[in-house]
Image (tube, rainbow, N blue to C red; front, side, top):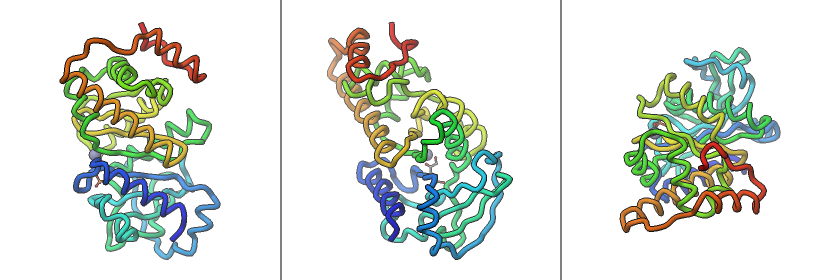
Length: 266
Ligand code: 13P
Ligand code: ZN
């Protein structure tokens, strides 16, 4: 098995083991490096073409590993070729070709529009370094979205205050999108606007989208957010009597050399 496919499967399964992928919940896309595409070329035996409902011309010619729609992260290691695939975006960005996997007429994740628009947005703000977009359904961050208005400042402050690492891991904060119908172009457009500013965006009452340069960075980001949400909910249940102050958040940002989003501090 090719290394990049192994790493992809490991991330899917790690998310499953943490309870973030009930049934077919969640999806993962990875924008492949040219050398990874070359390494996998011997697998490319299909050429099934499908149209896209969005303009992906900014990703023309890029290859992505994607999970399949309706497929279970739990099953990813057992039958990769049925549960995931490799696609190439058309030169005009209007569709894509399935080159490997997604066997038996399977399709890429229904959230492919969100993934591709998020890739475009994050590539633009990271000088092309972003390669991973990950959607998961972790219970604590989803539960937290029921306790606040959909406001990035409110959410980010709660998370920064709930675990000392948070301000260092996501100094920009975390975005939040109010409830929308998943799986479509509208939610994709709205998410991609927010993810330009924040490396992760919570979908209220649904889950989270995270982005990053590597599988580790992206998984670690979502893991850190989910852990902070868990700590917050536990502390809130027990009764919060004190928390990390804004001056401490500033000290933390200085000590670790990150630029914290000052708009979110008092
Ligand atoms: P897919 O099975 O199409 O990837 O959808 C799962 C999901 O989480 C939708 O938001
Ligand atoms: Zn989902």
